[in-house]
Image (cartoon, rainbow, N blue to C red):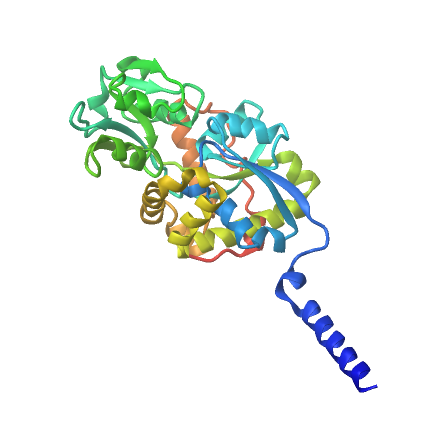
Length: 344
């Protein structure tokens, strides 16, 4: 009888443990499968997707992340998500605005880069540049269907120039190699992505000339997380849960950059040799991109009506976006507001 009492006590204790275990308590019985489409190869500002899976934020919100697919540019990422080939994606937000005018049904949910990280980049020892007018007559490597092309046209127009003032060479990804090989004089790119990669191949820090668009009239958001209009209409609860998990991961990345890089590499072992580059990319984001007065007031990833409007107006003034385009459509902050992200 004593043994039976002990057994019942043990079973009761085990049952209590199962009922109170954090994982069991927080992981819903039903899980929704989702996939993510990236704009490019894995970079530091994609960390949130991998962190949300590794740290259990997706699982706690009833989400099973089945795939994070590398991409070939923002334009393709937007179309793939808009067509339903993936539930969520990551892309340049000005390019999202252009895509919507072309009937790509996508909606921004978070602005990861509060300030555009786009720039014109050259190798300083070969073709130094310090201002937009230095580009006149230069041979610029252009990937004509991506976010860098949208940026290049807008950047030139913002500084009283056009594509007629430069020479263009259509280059295929990875287009940075054309710069290293001397086949083009400069390329448009991201200071939080291509710059660390290029510096590694061209002599280290200080080897590049970098003319950042934000310093010369290109006032726009950078990249962000998005979904389709259809998913918002049909499964708003899923969008809310995904956004909540994503913003939880964003907070973790901002507070734990070294571990975030380790998690990227764990999920993508082929990047084991790129730990230093990923770290540099993330540090650039932390110092020049992730945070703003708006994130201090409303939380990480926030999109404000004013800055969205300014981004659209910048593109309109430079004839990248038609004057008839909406200044208000294309983003949805209901899910971000419900998630109550940390303010930084």
